[in-house]
Length: 76
Image (tube, rainbow, N blue to C red; front, side, top):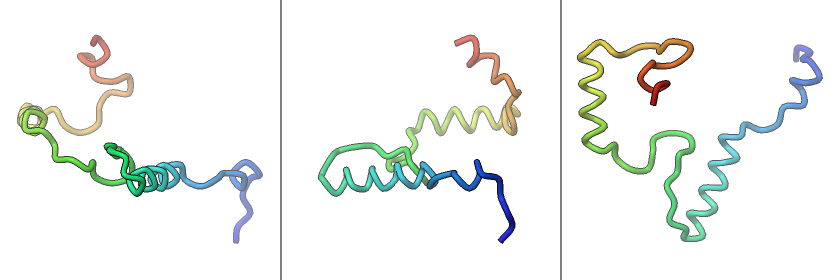
């Protein structure tokens, strides 16, 4: 195995997997929560968001955003 830096060797587990385990435990306990962890959300995308996404794609607003962010969102 190749040598890595000390700081790299000290990295812990991926936090997303830890969060997912915590969410699953809460669900097993019967808690009513929405998971925003790994994978798809556990609810369907609302129609108004689907429509807005299609509109944005048709208007050419797809691909990477500017490094500083989308001007409209920054202003908001």
